[in-house]
Amino acid sequence: MITDAVGRTVILSSSKHHRKDRDMFKNNMGGMDRGIRAIVGIILLALYFMGTLTGALGWVALIVGIVMLATAVIGWCPAYVPFGIKTCRTQ
Image (cartoon, rainbow, N blue to C red):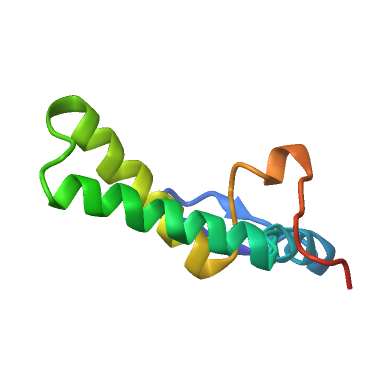
């Protein structure tokens, strides 16, 4: 038990809860999924930085491109978690 900043006593959770949280951030994307995301992300970023997409559509392309590229690099998609989707091989 520890005390937080307000003075309330906080009980730390058991290790089985920590294991569940850690499993949530395991890779859930396979190689093909990661490759496609990387290519689409790079294309969207290129379209934005070359000035092909401007205005609101340009901002959407920039944000989606960054997210696609980032998820491809780390191999984990937060949108897959609530649905239990995994495109990687099971171990």
